[in-house]
Amino acid sequence: MRGVSTLVRNAKQRRSRAQLLNAARVAARGWGWPVAPAVGLTAEGDCRCPRIDCPVPGAHPHDPKLLAATTDDRMIKWWWSRRPTAPVLVATGSQVCALSLPAEAGARVLDYFDALRVPTGPVIATPTRYVLLVAPYSLPELADLLVAQEWVPSSLRYHGPGGFVVLPPSETGAGALRWIRRPLSARRTPWLPAVSDLVEALVEASIATPDGATLAP
Image (cartoon, rainbow, N blue to C red):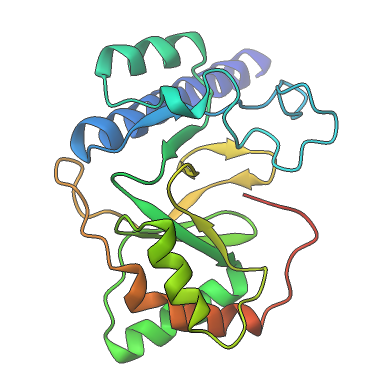
């Protein structure tokens, strides 16, 4: 029985590693989003970075740096051949941006958008947060939108120029990521809504939800 369980475990590990490489290649080749491996976790579940108290274990760039993110397939295959369990990190700014909020608020706001028939793009769930992918925005554009709000809670976070998001099926210190709303095609760049169409509702939803104690990705 021990031999069978080992074979099953090894098969699951191979499948997981193949899924991570495929996710990176789909994002880069199919959607044109620059990717890089996130720092990842040790066998004990700790972050591989030097920080003992890392606030987002496994879910941030380290080596390579964020500026190395690319759509080059040869580079992507080389990275994941060396680190097959590395989470898939997408650099935000030029091709895709995002806003994230606590999971409870995210679920409510998606129901709200559905009721009003407001289209949303792909949505990622971490164990603690929802990440809504949106069309690229500039920092001045985002600032103008936020200034128009009466109050903006700290539980709403922004992944714009110079930032990043982690894609499913990556595993981080907070747990596994999954798609709540998947991109419709692996070969066609997903449609992304304008941040201006969503931000007011996201602010309202975040105000009603207390911020978490950590920076969970």
